[in-house]
Amino acid sequence: MRGLRLFERASRSFHDYPLLSKFIVVCAVSGGGLLAYADANSSNGVHALAPPEEVSKKKKVVVLGTGWAGTSFLKKLNNPSYDVQVISPRNYFAFTPLLPSVTCGTVEARSIVEPVRNIVRKKNVDISFWEAECFKIDAENKKVYCRCNQNTNMNGKEEFVVDYDYLVIAMGARPNTFNTPGVMEYCNFLKEVEDAQKIRRTVIDNFEKASLPNLSDEERKRILHFVVVGGGPTGVEFAAELHDFVNEDLVKLYPAAKDFVKITLLEAADHILNMFDKRITGFAEEKFKRDGIDVKLGSMVVKVSDKEISTKVRGNGETTSIPYGMVVWSTGIGTRPVIRDFMKQIGQTNRRALATDEWLRVEGCNNVYALGDCATINQRKVMEDISAIFKKADKDNSGTLTVKEFQEVIDDICERYPQVELYLKNKKMRNIVDMLKEAKGDVAKESIELNINEFKTALSEVDSQMKNLPATAQVASQQGTYLANCFNRMEEAEKNPEGPLRFRGEGRHRFRPFRYKHLGQFAPLGGEQTAAQLPGDWVSIGHSSQWLWYSVYASKQVSWRTRALVVSDWTRRFIFGRDSSGI
Image 1 (cartoon, rainbow, N blue to C red):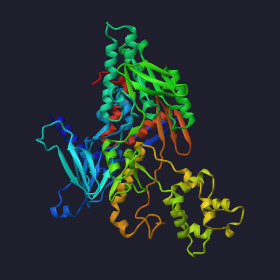
Image 2 (cartoon, rainbow, N blue to C red; image 1 turned 90 degrees about the vertical axis):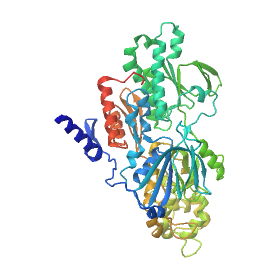
Image 3 (cartoon, rainbow, N blue to C red; image 1 turned 60 degrees about the vertical axis):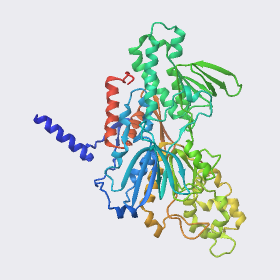
Image 4 (cartoon, rainbow, N blue to C red; image 1 turned 45 degrees about the horizontal axis):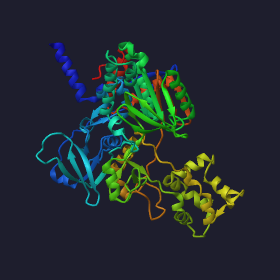
C-alpha cells in the first residue's frame, strides 16, 4: 500500500508539473552525437475567470481550426488582452507527418494527438474551445456560423453564430480528387488520424480475406494488391512503410500470402519526389525497384471502380485497368467548401486558396487572417510599385537615382519584396550595386545614376523569382508563430511601427512581412533509410539520416506526453515488431 501511495503521488506530480517529465532524446549520427531538445512551452500561469467588465474590453479573436497553423498560433499567443474562441470539428492537434507510421502500427494513433484543452489550459490568455464545424463566414458583419458535429439530438440547437473582432482562418484543406470518377467512393485518403486508422484496418482485413480457403489465386492477388496514387512525400513514405510492414511482420503471420502481395505506386509526373534534389529522387526510385515496389511514372488515373483502377499513360494515351485490393489517394490538396463559398463572397473566385497579403491578412477583408493549407500569400510584385519606389528613394527629386540614395532604402526594399534578395543570390551578385552597374554598364560605383527607365530595366527580372510556398506543416507552423507574435505586439506596433517603408503611402508598416525559413525536409524510404535535404544544398541518404529523422520528429512533438509516447512506440517496434491486430 505504501508503494501504491508513492506511485500515485509521483503520477500526480508529473501531471500537475509537466516540467518534471522533460527528457532528452539523444541519437547517434554517423559516429557522432545529435542532441534533440524541445520545450513544450507550458506556462505556470493559472487560467482564471476575468471580471465581466474586463472581458468586455477585450478584443475577441475567433480561431477556426486546430491543425499546425491554428495550434502554433495558440501556443505562441501570450497577450492577455484578447478573448480567444477556438472552433474546430476535432478537439485535438495531430502530428500529421507521422500518419504514414500510424497506418502500419509503427506508431499508435493516440501517441501523435494532443487535446487542445491540454495545450491551452495553463496559458495566461482567456482561451475557450468549442467542438463544432464552421459552415459559413460573414466578413461584412463579422460573424461565423457553426454547427455541432456530434450525432446527438439537441432539439434544433445544433447551429449557432459567433461574433468576432479578429478572425483567424486555419481550417486546412481537403484531398484533391481532380474530379476523377470513383475516387471519393472507393479510395482511402491520408489527411486525418481516422484515415490512417481506416487504412490500417483495411490492410489487416485484406490479409485475413486472402487467407480464406475458398478463394482463387487470382482473387488473392487482387485482394493483396495495394495501390498508392501520388509520388509525393506522403505517398512515397506510405509505400515504404507498407513494404516494411508486410516484409518484416505480416509475412511471418501470413506465410501463404507472401507470393501474392504487390505494392504499386502511380505518379503522373516523370519522377517521384519532384520537390527534392535529383540525387534523392534517383536513389528513391532505385531503392523502390530493388524492394519490388512497382513505380509507374507518367500514369494518370482516369477512373476508379470497386475492384479496378484505370490509368492512362501520359504521351501515348494508352489506357489500362489494374485490379486492386486497396487504393490510397495522395495527390495534393483542394479547397474546402466553406472556404470556396467565402472566396466567392469576397471576390476571390477562380483561385485554389484564399489570397492573403504578406502579413497573412485576407485580401479584401478587415481583421481577417488566413494561414496554413487554406491560404496562399499573394506576394506583391516590384514592377507594380516601381514608380513609387523610385519616387521614395529620389529624395532630392532630381529625376535620377544615385547609389547612395538607393542604399538608404535597399533594406526596406529587400524586406518588403523578398524576391529582390533571391534574385541577387541566384545571379551571384554581392549587393544591389552590382545589379545597378549591370543595368548601367561598366562604370565606377560613384558615378552611377539611373533614371526611371534604367531603374525599371535593372529590376525587370526580379519578379521572376516569386514562388508560392509549399503546403507543408513547416510553413503552417511558422505562419502561426508569426501571426501570434504580431498579435502579442499589436498595440506596441501601432505606436512604434517596426516594418519596412510604405512605398505607396506614408510612414512604415506595423510589422515586418512574413518570411518563410526553410529548415529542410525528409523522405523516409523504408528499411531504416531516410533521405534528408537540409539548407545549403546538403543532402544525406541512409541510416544516419534515419536517426536524424527520429530525433527531429521526436523534438517537434507538441507536448512531452506525446514525445514520450512516440519514442516508446519506436522502441516497442524495435523489440516486438509492429502491431498487426488491426485495432
